[in-house]
Length: 156
Image 1 (spheres, rainbow, N blue to C red):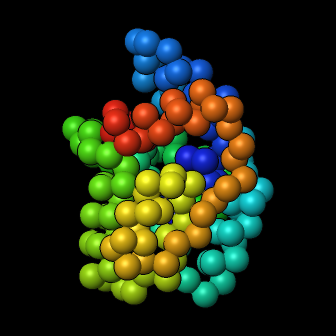
Image 2 (image 1 turned 90 degrees about the vertical axis):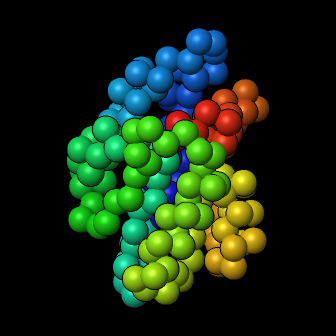
């Protein structure tokens, strides 16, 4: 289960990465104020009934405490959280496939839930079932900024 754009609404902070230079400090500092996506919360709750939900996010490790607190506040915490290491700038699709392959060595993967089309395509190519989180509607420039942050910059 991804976080940004799936259970957390990131649209309010995309303005920090739409311009150059990108203000990564402001972008990440605003993560604690992300509103929840009710649809994403519902997917977590539904899957948790008979699956072990694991959050796989491109967020950097320094956001662990903020992320865990956010998940708890919104009633979906207490689950394993796998994050990007501080020095990793690989594209989200590459990073997440690697993580899911490692997780598969521990238990079968039921479904991968993400909002990033490139992540979903890479997961499908690797043989995983996917569910596209399509509820976060973004303006064209916001969508482009997030895609660049995830795939080109390797930052979320």
